[in-house]
Image (cartoon, rainbow, N blue to C red; front, side, top):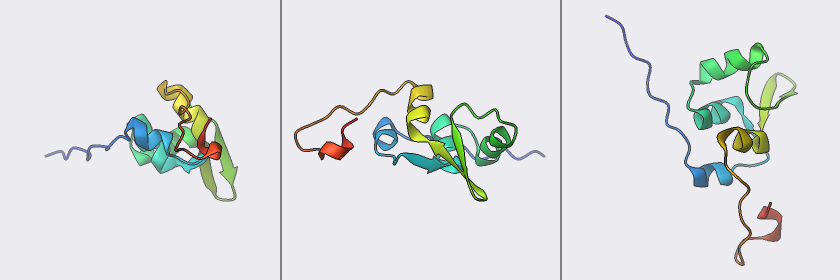
Length: 87
């Protein structure tokens, strides 16, 4: 009997727009709809589809690259949004 891997809960567009400048590999993998382990395998083999920064023993994915890969444009500025949040 084989056991199916648990489904990966992808991020919504709103959640993607609210992400900080860099995220961990697990969050980026969720956004891409892949498992955490597959995401780390792609990082280790330099095949992750976004720019990955190494910080000591951990890795950080550049959120703007993640959004570009997913085809999500910058967040539009609104009157109630802080100026720093507008891209």
